[in-house]
Amino acid sequence: CYSPLCTYLSRLALVSAWQQFRCLVGRPPSARRAGHLSVTGAEAERVEGYALAAASHLKGSDKVAIAVERTIPAHAGFGSGTQLALAVAAAVARLNGAAFSAQSFSTSLDRGNRSGVG
Image 1 (spheres, rainbow, N blue to C red):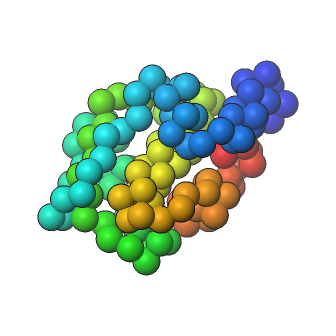
Image 2: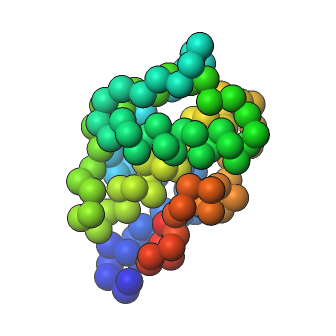
Image 3: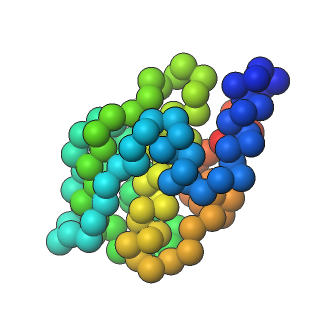
């Protein structure tokens, strides 16, 4: 993808996942430790999948509660799935006391297969 938007999004990859998500959506998902995995709000099914994949990647706990207020439109060329996946993975990593790297999580989250931007 060579559009200005794709170029812009690829440059955002240099910024942490939380900052990327804030830039596109305005507010990252909130996350906290919990007794079991709980997801509420927009895209709950996708978010749950991303949380389970991130916990599996870390070999850590998936006992988190995640609330998503809003997301950007899916399949509109904004990288919404990648931004959501990275934000959730960053939250799960932080709650597990682990380091987060978008590059290290990309395969586990099934990101970067299409355009390579995400």
